[in-house]
Amino acid sequence: MKKEYVLKTDKLTKVYGKNKVVNEVSMHVKKGDIYGFIGKNGAGKTTFMRMVSGLASPTEGSMELFGEKDLEVQRKRIGSLIESPGIYPNMTASDNLEVVRRTLGITDRHIVEKILEFVGLESAGKKKVKNFSMGMKQRLGLAISLMRNPDFLVLDEPINGLDPSGIKEVRDLLLKLNEERQITILISSHILGELSKVATKYGIIRDGVLIEELDTMQLAEKCRRCQKITVDDVEKAAHILEETLFIRSYDVPDQHIIRIFENLEKAEKINQAIIMGGVAMKESCLVGQDLEGYFMEHLGDNAHQN
Amino acid sequence: MYNLIHAEFYKWKKSKSFFVCLLSAIGMILFVYFMLKMVSEVQTGKIENGTSGIVVSGELLEEENEDILKQIGILELISEIISSGTGSIFSAIFICIWIVSEYSHGAIKNTAGKGYLREKVFLAKYLSTTMIILLMNLIMFIVMLFIGFVIIGTEDVNKIFFQNFFSYVALQLLFNIAFGGIVMTICECIRNMAASIGISIFLISFSPIIMSGVDILFQALHLKLKVSDYWIISVMNQCPTEGFAMEFIIRGIVVTVMWTVLSLVLGMIHFKKADIK
Image (tube, rainbow over all chains, first blue to last red):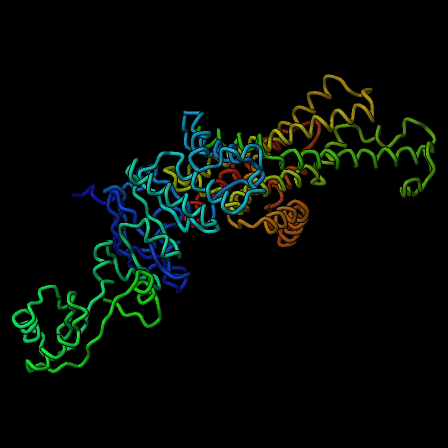
């Protein structure tokens, strides 16, 4: 059970001066997850990821990697790409990877060629990195993070600056890494549509606070199209739904709200039945969100915490 | 630790900054020799006063053996060049480029947080940079010696000359360990190229004067402490070229160890605590 989580933080906090950039974040990333980390600019994603990668130290709170507290040892199992790739612009891609190979003490000299091929930079050849496009630099950054064949990848907006084909390639690459090598991935991105194509779990951060963690099924459930009715007596309304209308697919998220997931085309009949059954109805509407709508609601200024 | 140092030397091999700084230093050394040679030629009347903009005041020398370069001698000339800070400035510029570019390019992210203790990462950087700086300075000394042979001649070169030369070079290389360490720590703490270079040049150019000022102040206050005797750059400038007194050698070693340890410890503490952005 202990080793089920690749990353587990407990009230991790980072304060710069008087500014609490990361505020008591307790995150749980399970082995095999692709964890999509979502938040606006300045929400605290990068700072959090820096702390996970060992580039910044937390002010308060604790962290476990692979179920262990000995973070320096466990960080050998992590590959990371935080903000921009760390590369020497006057060297070639091969040279940059060779530096990393020697730093990490990797004895296989052919790994540089293999990794370059894996990320699609095998033809970069003698070109110096300062002449690379942004997409090529991002790929090189990804290559650096993969050098040690990590068990956990921490990627901060890895598809920044990539064209649509590049985005697709990175997406396919991440899915391949997750499926074939069982690499757990923590990835942040602004491009919600892309994230929704890869992520198996989501964490939403707002003003340094992790406001929600949910997996894809829970997210689908929350975004599911339904008839939402607000009544004064939920029990009586539920009884009417079941006994009179034979509706079984509904839930009660609140003491005055019922969400009905079937017979959405018969919303008027449902309303009539409930009112005629003596239940006062304040509101009835059809609701449902796409992923982007759901996240924007939670990231926006008028969002409320669950 | 071996892996970290191994990677540092690979980077050094691929980097142009070492060669650019070294060649610039050699260029400056050549320039100094050239200027003095011109002065000498003007003074002995071999060329007209004012040639190439060089104006020498005073009377012409009549005897060739009063040639200014021959009067100074190779070792003294080397000492003058070192005291002027020529070698130190280019060493410092190289260190600043070498250390600060790791932060400006973000490459430090590939080393820190990769399972190595921060102290080890800093120590590896410190050791490798020190070795590179010593090599740079050694090459400069050899160049200064060689140019001296060519321009001044080898009349006064004998066994004692070489003993003095090697002793002087050994002491200066030792002092450069501490000097390099101070610059590295400045770079690590500031992490800004322009500021690091500026502060380093300020230290090289003005700190000996400031220390001398403090000595005068202490003397006026009847305090026996002579601060400049314990400041590494002042000690580098004070280094004799012959008759190496045991007192100076011991003081030099103590000062070197003191500033090396201090810079290493401060740099390590800062690197351990500071976030990497």
